[in-house]
Image 1 (cartoon, helix red, strand yellow):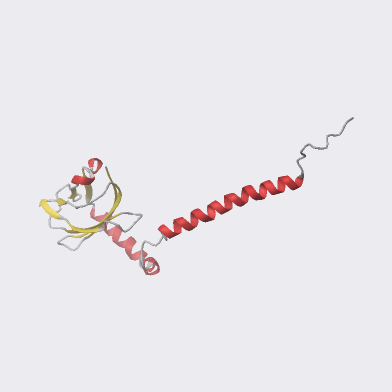
Image 2 (cartoon, rainbow, N blue to C red):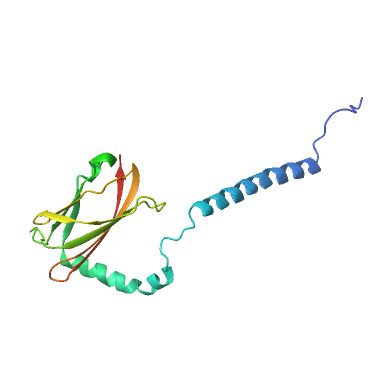
Amino acid sequence: MSEQSGSFRLTGKHILIFLLLFFGTITLVNIIMIRMALKTFPGIENEKPYFQGLHYNQTLAERAAQAALGWQISLLDEDILVAENTHLELLILDRHENPVSGVDIQAHLFRPAGGDGDQRLIWSEQKPGHYIIEPKGLGKGNWMLNITGTAPTGEKLVIEHRLWLN
């Protein structure tokens, strides 16, 4: 029986070094990616989240009151939005499918992942129950539309809607 003196032999020490290098590399890449993500978006959407949390029950009560109104609210033509020529039309009907007229509606249009291009918009009523806005300078991609309104009789309206512009 002859013994080979120059051959490589895999030992426990080699396995340990391989595992430490493998998992060390993964950990290092994860740390780098987490730091880069936190630099670009710290996760804060509201400057005072604690106070918003304190008033959450009030928010729930307002949304329940809005649901009790039975209003039907729809954004028309949202599936064919194009960034260069965008107009949004909102239709508001009461529980008997009659148009709700005279609602003072404002909107905040913004990108969910950044602060560029934010717009505050006021809807104008074109005909009873039909409200329209024409935001300018929108780029393609994902947008959030937060709509708030007050009817002449004092009812509140709050809508959060995600849009995708082609």
